[in-house]
Amino acid sequence: MTWGSPVEIETRNRIRLSVAAHSYEMHSRSFLSDAEYDALSREIDLSISTTNPKLDNFFREHFHPDTGMWIHKHPDRAGLEKLYQKFYKDRSK
Image 1 (cartoon, rainbow, N blue to C red):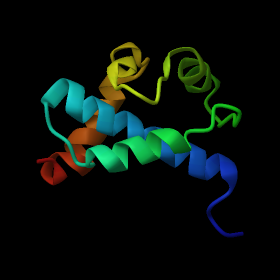
Image 2 (image 1 turned 60 degrees about the vertical axis):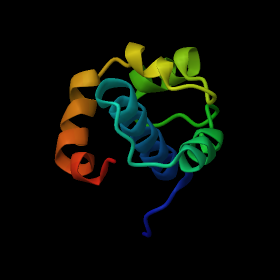
Image 3 (image 1 turned 180 degrees about the horizontal axis):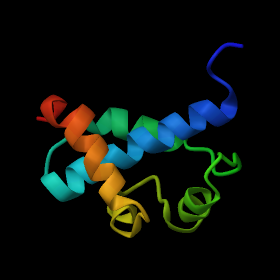
């Protein structure tokens, strides 16, 4: 089986976008350009349910593709901070 089902892709996109919004809003640092962030935001498909119903509901209720302010209500900000520190901190500008 190859990786890349719609659920896997949607999950990856939501995680990456969440960490990018967290990085910008909490650390004033970006690892995506504005154009990359906007493009990724437009790819988010709220009709796809992932394996995490809590985050699916969060995205459906709070996500807005034209801003990153929704990240302040994310239910796992500690988890986002861990991902930021481990994978993205050194890539931020």
